[in-house]
Length: 148
Image 1 (cartoon, rainbow, N blue to C red):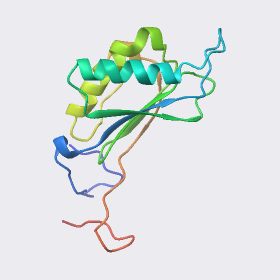
Image 2 (image 1 turned 180 degrees about the vertical axis):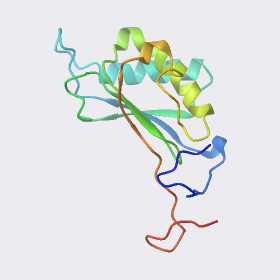
Image 3 (image 1 turned 180 degrees about the horizontal axis):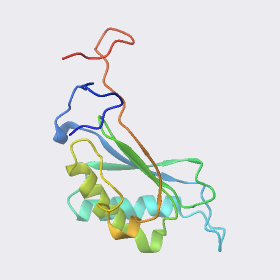
């Protein structure tokens, strides 16, 4: 079941293998104790772990500040036609396996939607936001939704 912004609304579905999946890591978050910025190291470690687990198609990128400063380190999951997630309180040295597990789960979800109980245990209590997928728009017609 798709979790659209409005009931009855349909979106253009991209084949799962064609969707771009992206994990974005905040590069300005600071560890509350050491004041270090672990984002760049997490990107490198996460890329390697994803490749080792057959998820090399998931890109990992950095972004300067994702407004989760009170709950560092923040990590977002996004894909076309899917709900997006923002997690905080990520501990790079401990949570890589959990982030990879969610990347696999997220890639397998048609619309990206899952409850907090369905996510890996290491992410429980770390969800800062879940945003519904944007509805698709009809190509070439600005502001007009696809009615197919």
